[in-house]
Amino acid sequence: MSEHDEDIDFLEEHIPELAEAAVTQAYWQTLASGNSVLESENGVIYEVFPDGTRKVVKTGEPPVPVEKGEKRLLP
Image 1 (spheres, rainbow, N blue to C red):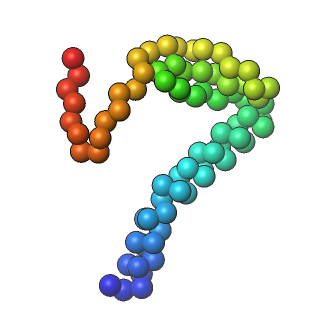
Image 2: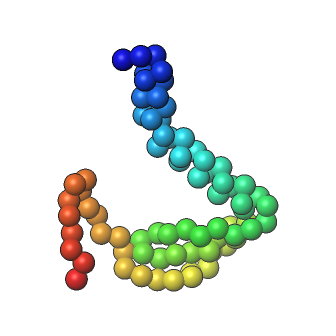
């Protein structure tokens, strides 16, 4: 395996961490700029405002836990 391949493997291993950091940064930057963000929690979508208040936008079914590789059919 070449050094280039090892570098790519290293970066690929850290993609989830980098993605999480990018989403967190975007979340806080959006609120800091005076805009609201949407959050999903247990099947409920909330609009979160810069002052910390939350407003229910939509209520749905809570998420269904699924194991990796498991297949489910929708009713």
